[in-house]
Image (tube, rainbow over all chains, first blue to last red; front, side, top):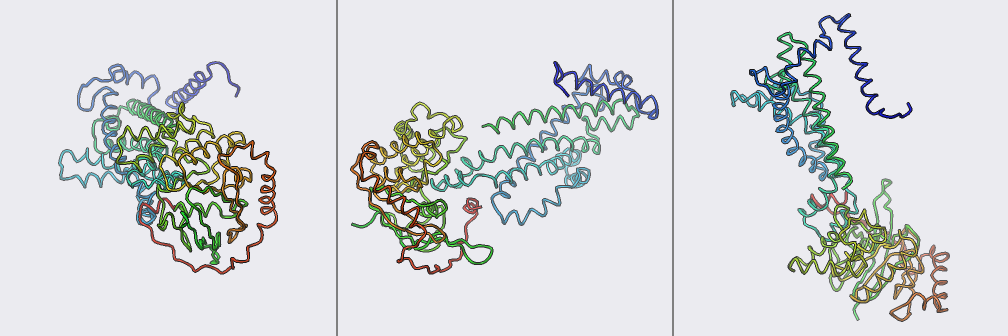
Length: 261
Length: 287
């Protein structure tokens, strides 16, 4: 398609209009239980115009719920990076370590967050009321760390021999080799991993909240499903999507900065 | 007088999947005096860079040995300043920081201010006074190699090893840098071994040119003494009829005689040495 003025704005709006049209059409015809766009808007309005309102445990403004989810994601994600990055370095540096742990990583990697969560809850049964929080953190961390682990490992293996030779000629200590050569050279790969990990962490939080019933976007979604307020399911989906999109954009900005550095 | 660098019976073989090891260099003998500038010349792929890399300690020696000022060379170290072909500057550091990285290693007892002065001195001498706080990406290829030279000299090494340092430069820049190198070499009275395949470069810089035979199993073919007075000027050299005689000899070797192994180097396979086990972090640099 030819470029024209404002195409960057008009075309996406056109796409949204098409989807809204289909949505309205479906809810009017064969999917009678699907709320129409208009009904969704009216029912969601109090949650959007007062985004930080707190009317009760499970009746709060949508951004307040989002904030709860984000704080939990931030903790789980931080955990994933703190554990995942060193593992990635070991995998990249040592063939023995790779041979030992790569098979188990390949097996654990595809396991769904829904499968990890019950194990997380069991692990932290002793903490009583907080088991839900710790279980969710555990699940986020273990699901989100794999892209960081694997990308860091690839990055370490891809460090040019020339740079390492410089380190050898100068007889840099292990610590200096790590901080002056390996980490800077691996940084672009690490950030690609970090970005992918954040995407996964955000996917996992919704599932974790649905199962544990914690207040947050995911918990809200599940509760409103049980309360038969289907409009709010759609509201939650849209918010989850938007937040995920914004997070990814922010991370790729950061990633670009380190690519050019 | 005892030689400053003594290479004797040096050999390098690599194992191949077929089981028959590939012999790169064999029975390579060379003695270099202190303060001498020697170039290794030969066709590309003949193994001259392998010899340099073994002296630098970046490649393991298969057979024979290297003695530098009375001590056997084992592994790499900053007592040998290496100038790489691609200057190998770390792109996340400025030119200054790249030079400082080495200085911090060698002069770790000196005060920070003193170390800074050493870096600034060498960067200024190579002509980077105004660009020393730029990153390699902002520097031209020639300026990067100037920085590479500064980094090597700033280590105050016993010996300089230069691996086709000007191979990637246009000829005007190459001439400039050859003079920068020669100036520093004379000022600091270093011993230098340089690999090149540029005949004029070898003649302009060296006291001796070592011609290597073609690989596999490359070795020293002939050695040419270059007795032009120093300091040399390119103009003077080009006006000297003897220059063209030497040039003809070098080219003659490269074109005709480099295919034949000298008689004294009998082609006996060197004893196979099992590869040494390496520890964890040093294994990464070989990966």
